[in-house]
Length: 169
Picture: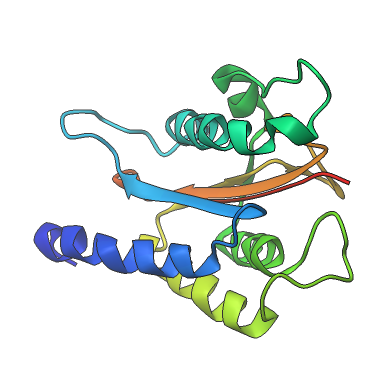
């Protein structure tokens, strides 16, 4: 895609991500890195956006948290992100959009619809995109002050997409 078409397509990326949002459990953020910056394909650029999203969500969850609980710093978030393949990003993002981390038998949305939407998001960012998650083996390394959280974030170096699920039991 040419840059102008790609910039206009950002609204499509936003629409796709917003269709997966199910607040307060599932939240999303997307955008273009600021003009004049040289975002890398590494986790640092994305970690800052993940941290900002977590900071925006924290007040919504604060009353459910232990007194004084605070989310990790941006550098701690960055350290907790692990690289993913595009196929693993589709699988994990689908899981976060469709399945409740707190109550695994509860569904947040139709899994087939979530997978179709997530596949379109991954294709929108393209084959050169890098993907990151806080999934460590079979557990999730926290990026929030909540008991349960999972995040998948991706970037093609110019645009980014983030989906996070938070929960408390």
